[in-house]
Length: 423
Image (cartoon, rainbow, N blue to C red; front, top):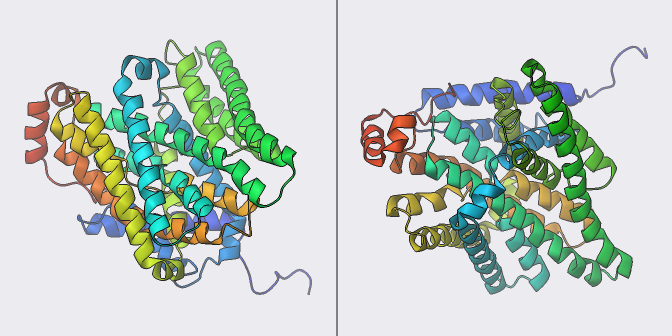
């Protein structure tokens, strides 16, 4: 009876997308019932339950085949993050660039020395340290939206996260020749492959950004089509990057940066994705929870905890010193570092890139980074929500942001909303 489906039945990509959304809705509901539980943590807990480390309703093979859904989610989020990086603002506010370089260098050094202490070889330790520079835009954007946060610290943190991810990708690319050399690759692979991925990703994003800007200007009187233009540009860029063997992580980030810095009058750079982006946030975090490996987390437990502690201390201390050096208020300087601590999407993507490029050497890198990501994804959302409240930007409006004292007073009086669903 050839008309019957094959057994056992495995869900296709559309079915997995639906399962992730349904599970995410359940996780969000549980977070809403328990105000102390951030919704992101609820999404990830449900993902863990239905994933390979739990009930195995979604197997590792099924999750791998549905990776395209997560690539789209990450593309949207990284594009949105790129829009927060205004190069003109960076030039006028050296605090951002200096702080990003300071805390990124401190993070690399702290993680590298920690792993060296545990006996890791130099190259894997350096690769993990480079990946650890990255910060999670999804956690910051989602929690900031969830608690209705706005203000100078929120804006600065978004720019710093974008800079962190650019620096992480550059550091990762700089290490590729050493890995190719250790694998006895030909000189063309050692020299040209990293340059091709980096330069090609920037070129593709620049061309796509100029095209999007041109189309947005030509259709500025028909703004109802701008969302379709942006979504189409992101999907085209992701598809072209995959076809051309470029980075599907770095390209959408650069696309957002290009669009933001081309527009003198906001056309699509201030576009509100609305609830559509929320769906992809949910999918991303449930998928991340389903992909957590408890076996690796237990095996590398102490090393992963040490990595988390070293990275957290370096991020916080670097951001604090940068803030104090540029005479930022102490409360703002202390809170900014906490907003940089979550690590997820780009880290996972860089791990997968290293697996594809160096399958023989990537096993310890994958295991340890995923173990650290699992810890950061549970600790990160509460830390971000708490930091936004401490600095007085959770639930802030324009007037309260303009007056720090008023913002702090409002934050003290406002009811807790960490577990509430996004408005």
